[in-house]
Amino acid sequence: MRELGGDMVKRLMDKGCPGAARALLWILRRTWISGTIALVVLTQALEARADPAFNAWRAQLWLEAQARGVRQAVFDRATNVQLDLGLPDLVIPGRPVKEQAEFVKLPADYLPRQQLTGLARTGARHFQTYRGLLARIETDYGVPGNVVIAIWGRETDYGAEVQRHPVFQALVTQAYLGRRKDLFRSELLIALDLVQEGTISMDAKGSYTGAMGHTQFEPSDFLKFAADGDGDGKIDLERSIPDALASGAKQLRDYGWQRGKRWGFEVRLPPTVSCVESSPDIKRPLTAWLKLGVTPAGDAPVPSGMLQDQAQLVMPAGTYGPAFLVFANFQAIRSYNQSDVYALFVGHLADLIAGGAPFEKPWARLKPLRNSEVAAIQTQLSRSGYYSDAIDGRLGTVTRRAIGQYQQRVGGSVDCWPSQDLLAGARPASD
Image (cartoon, rainbow, N blue to C red):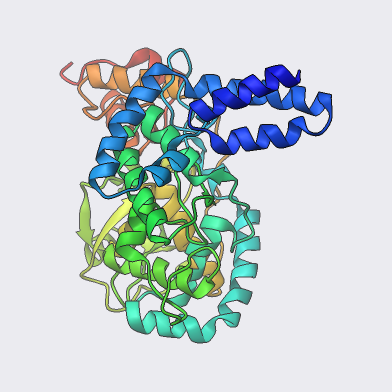
């Protein structure tokens, strides 16, 4: 056993894994059983790193990192990792892509009332605790404190959510196997710069995309949006809540947040306004929607000073859930995470923190949809002339609108939601 272990130590050193070699030596000095387990684990890790394609990819990445001034020791320690094949959004032959929650969960599951109520209760306490800080943040960036707190709550449950993915392991895996390789290659190179500068730790942990800190910043976000919220001359988004909250506000401001304006509100629709009107391509001044008979839910007052602001109708569950009119600030939140339900979560949570009411119309309990089923519907609608976007298996705004347009064409109810009948019976728009 010790001879085999010694050989493995040498191989680990030859492969540029001194940390793993030291760990094995330490374990080999303990029990024979522990050494055997360690040997198996480290052998698997070594085999993963010995993948010729991965090694070639790493060698090419090193040329880019070296040109940026990254030191060899920093690069080796950060990228000599075992790939995490359990992450979402990876493209692995013979295995379906594991989607992130924003793109697969039904709205009722993504926006549960009980979770939102609990987060609002905790968020209201944090709002009081950081009232002075939040007032300064709003003065500096124009983003209200309840919105900043809502971002914090959605991203990490106010810091209570444990970040379990080693950042460099996640970034290397996504850059090598992810669906968005180029994006994550860029994020990985920026992260190498940040760790060399001492901005982030080599051992930092975050999300499966490499997002870090209380408000979940990608490496590129550090460069663009990180702010010193506590005035100590440095930025620490993991340990400094003021830094994290100020940075989140700066990001929303830079994404187009309009001071003194609302993100949107729930509405009631008249029979003459259908879910087909729910589209990013259809925007009208708020006053025009009001003239069509659209009114705020709960008989709430119309927001003052926004009558001429452009508004879009959003109905993430078609007719089976609430409808919303949203404005520029909704798009700013959406830029934080490219998902309508994410932006609705943050906007609604912010309203609840400020004492607002729950959704007036409940979300219906709908049958879960497989990505393959949605992709088949997209394909059928594309052939029929109703859909021209990517066949991605995601039930987004464009797909829901295409479904509604098809339903209008064939007659019957228009709910902008997929069904087996739709999958079986779409026909050309020119019929």
